[in-house]
Amino acid sequence: MRALAEFPLVSPLFSTIKRYERVLSAGSMVAGFAFDNYFFERVDHPATQITLAGYLVVAIGSILLIHFIESRVDERSLLRKGHPLLVVGTQFALGGLWSAFLIFYGRSALAANSWPFLFILAAMMVGNELFREYHSRLAFTCTLLFFALFSYAIFVVPMLVGTMGWFIFLLSGALAVAAFIGVLIALHNIGAERIRKAWDGIGIGAAGVLVSINLSYFTNILPPLPLTLSQAGVFHSVVKEGDAYRAVAEPLGAYAWLAGAPVMHVESGGALSVYSAVFAPIQLRTNIVHIWQRYDEARMMWRTESTLRFSIVGGREGGYRGYSNKSAPANGRWRVNIETPDGLVIGRVAFFVAPGSADGRTEQILR
Picture (cartoon, rainbow, N blue to C red):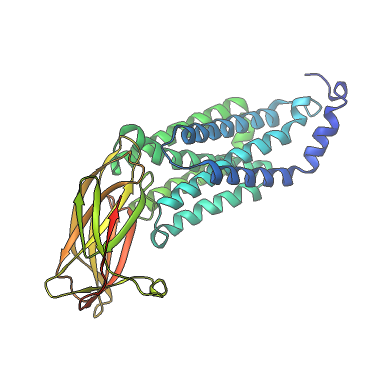
């Protein structure tokens, strides 16, 4: 490797980068987040998948190259002086991944259910910047990478195989573990001594990722990505007419938004309908479940009154549409959970049922 003195214009550049490494790293993460917020739309769009795959390639390549430099390259070499650029590249890629995950998982999540998982994503994004000591960062960066691989596999594998469920989730996890082991083998071959020093941290971090994501899935707090609720609401009736759905809505008061949930006035023997449009990627087929629940004031708990399941096919821009009916709903507080068959909550429609008839009901066309 040629000495740095042979490159008089390069030395000041690398010195400046080294001096402002922390600012550049933080700025690269913010840039990645801003880029994703502006450009990402559909999770199944080819450009989105190419970008996410590119982030993973850059992150893995940068981690391996940094490990090579730290393990084998002389302090005076030009490659060694370019180390800060690789750190910036790693953090840009990881920052881009976390921002994309926050965007897509956030769109798919019901905050009341999925906030712990979203909090973990945000914490990992912040930790990517805070842990900067090399040995700590090697272990932590490997943990971040494994979390990114697992989070990516969770929604990419269902899109590739065209279905969802607990088996597909376990398959996603197995593929993420296999990819992560491949990276660890490469790191070991590049510099065994350095990775050996960080091995305990890597093991603890990887175990934590496995436990947290599996716990999130099997306790139903993991957002059901790649599914996203496009539209939902409660109506007095919903009827499909051709390619549209005609719904009868109850007028809302001027300050209805303050109540948080609409009041539906139902006459004796009447019924209510809940409509939902769920976006799914192209070729993905799964089931959607509407679970009607009424709050039992005496026992202070939600009771399931009825359940309806219907199949959906992905690809429609506005989401695959469907509705369920409930005859003679009792007065009180209600909610309808819109879920996957394995219990992941896609969305929720909450409302109150009161006796009487509503004047001024209007028809809406739901497209």
